[in-house]
Length: 100
Image 1 (tube, rainbow, N blue to C red):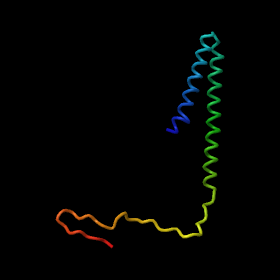
Image 2 (cartoon, rainbow, N blue to C red):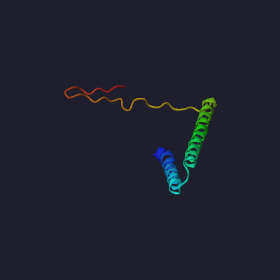
Image 3 (cartoon, rainbow, N blue to C red):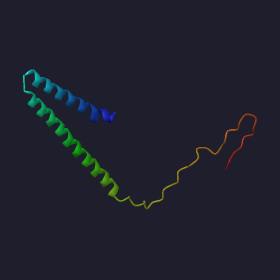
Image 4 (cartoon, one colour):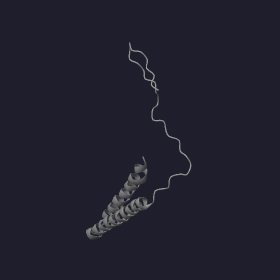
């Protein structure tokens, strides 16, 4: 759900705006060179933004890796129980066994 709200919906809105601008330019009789320049500018803007995004993600990953692990706490920590139950349920016709 986070991916949709944070990435897909803004990308869809940007795509709709780009297509609407291209349609507007073509309906106004703008030359092909201007439309191609606009499309090229949009592509370059996308490449620039994705490069910045990837560098930021790489920096976040490197920062998370380079952070030292926190020291063990000085207070005692109780052990978690590994078995939910120590009683096994017998099959039909067998005696009940209690493990201790």
